[in-house]
Amino acid sequence: EAQVTQNPRYLITVTGKKLTVTCSQNMNHEYMSWYRQDPGLGLRQIYYSMNVEVTDKGDVPEGYKVSRKEKRNFPLILESPSPNQTSLYFCASSTRDRGGYGYTFGSGTRLTVV
Amino acid sequence: AQSVTQPDIHITVSEGASLELRCNYSYGATPYLFWYVQSPGQGLQLLLKYFSGDTLVQGIKGFEAEFKRSQSSFNLRKPSVHWSDAAEYFCAVGATGTASKLTFGTGTRLQVTL
Image 1 (spheres, rainbow over the protein chains, first blue to last red):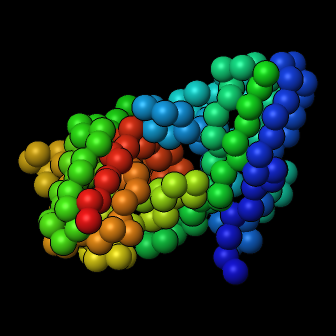
Image 2: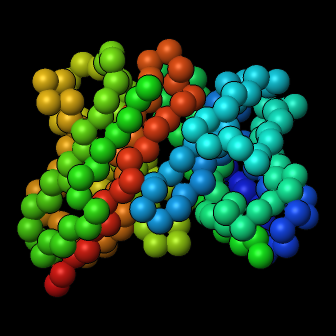
């Protein structure tokens, strides 16, 4: 089944403790992206990647890191999480082919930083 | 920079009634436009997309949207709403040439009364 898989689904952590949220897609998509969703703010793009080793900042990149060493994986790293990073996070992937353009989303990771 | 406005935060309709959700975008050229739906506790599912050509786009679940360049709008419609359509709906705009950067609106929550 074609899908974007995020882990974990739920995570509670303490301020300052480094964490990684993994994201993997099995559709051989070139594009991958991370979004955070907050009430009243919709989805805001954190980082995106157009291909292996090609990443760029989205609208809210502060406090986050990403890497794209393999085409299928795009982990999100919070090196020193803070309470304002408590949010619902989505990973998404898309082909760059025009006819298939449009992100496929994972099921989300609900992160709480205390 | 591209942006999306969804002016209605919350809409309530009766089952069987027609539905129109508003979306206005800001982008200098012809954009890529999308509608996504998010059911409670779920990820986002692509309803439909517009790239070019016919301005009336058909999607899944009986939804359609019309691109109106003169009004910078991409409103979502459904002739007869079902109770299962209750969800949050997001409009998104993607820039041509940088297809990986997708900007979302803040969403419209649809409530369906029986």
